[in-house]
Image (cartoon, rainbow, N blue to C red; front, side, top):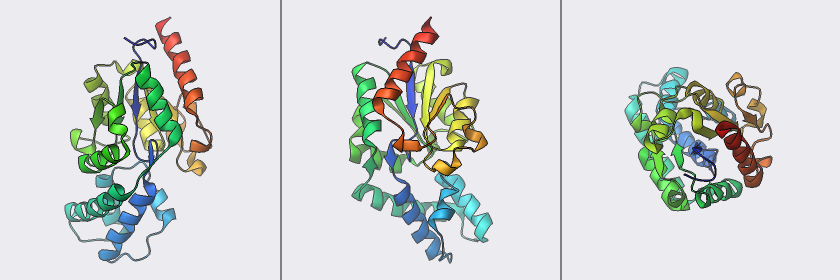
Length: 233
């Protein structure tokens, strides 16, 4: 057991560990254009931040009246995303630094995301983050995506951790809500700062309203040490 007791830390991937949203937006824009939606904007995309790709394409079909099968649209989007992700995905430096601090302390960590296994593997391998986490949970591993708690509960199960001892780092309101539903504490780092007042963030144990601009590895690590001490007292 580490100096931080039974603590386990679960990271969302897209928008939390890595700035993959520009790649997701471009992949979405290209896929939708192919199926007759030529004016998909970044503002449109922001409304789907934190929603799994599978759930997103279902929402697209309804919003845009698309007749294309959901699986076909999902495959088209994922194919384009993988091409972009393999070419370049930016890791948030302070998030990598936090993972390194936790690894040095022997704290078990996981990545739990609504992305496909292929997309997660491309990003984690390409950025070297795979060397810093012991468990990876994708959308394919659970029946329900966020805001349902399934993704985080599966990560805790694979880590052998009690949900009570888990802290989730999330950038999106559905993910923060999922952490709360799983009985876990949450450090919320909104990708879209203007969404900080979303009700999904209301249950976060720590809300950094300015997002990544406000996040530092050292301050997050100190907060984790403090909560671990309180939990073990």
